[in-house]
Image (cartoon, rainbow, N blue to C red; front, side, top):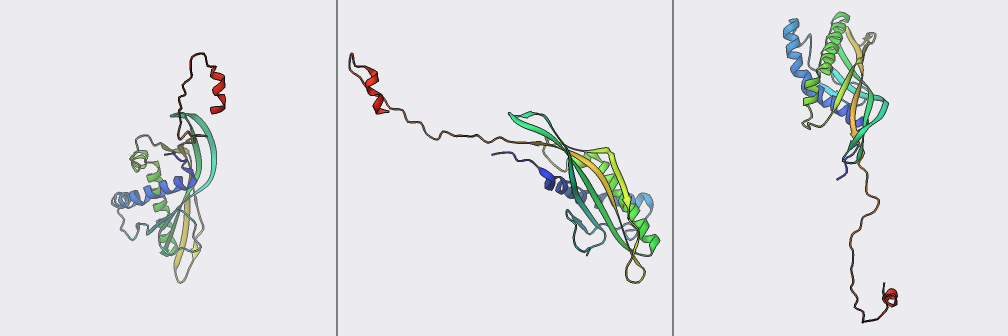
Length: 204
C-alpha cells in the first residue's frame, strides 16, 4: 500500500484534534492557578478547521493552514523520497461575553492557554501513537494578534485573536511501480541431433 503525503488538511486536523483533547484538561489547571471560575475562563464549545460564515458557539477555536513555506528533501525511506514540509498556521480564538472588560480578559486568557498547549511538545507528539511520526512547531515563528471589540446586542461584546506559528511535518512520497509482470510463460522445445535451433524462431 502506498504511503500518501499528509498535506495541509492533515496539518490543521492534527493540531485541531490535539487542542480538542488537551484544552479542556489544561483549562482546569489554569483556572486553579489563576483562581478563576468556568465562567471567567470557559471551555471552548467548538473546535473546527475552517472559517464559517457565522459563529454559533462560544468560545470557538479555529485552526487553519495559511501557506506552505518550505519543502526540503531530507533523505529516503525504503527508497522513497522523504520531505520536510513547513506549513504556516493560525489558530483563532473567538469569545463573547457581557461587558468589554470581561470579554477582553476572557479572550486574552484563552489565547494564553492555547499558546501553552501549542508549546507543550510532549503532549503534542503524544496525540499520534506512531513512534516514527514527526511534527514540530517552530517556537521562534510564534506570534499573537488581537482584534478590536465588537458590540453586539445589549452589553454583549465579541473579541477574537489568533496565534500564528509554523509547523514542520516529515512526509514521504511512495513511488508507484511503472510496470508489473503478472505472468511469465515458459515453453520447452526439443530438437533433434544436428537440428539448427534457429529453425525454431518462428515458434516464439
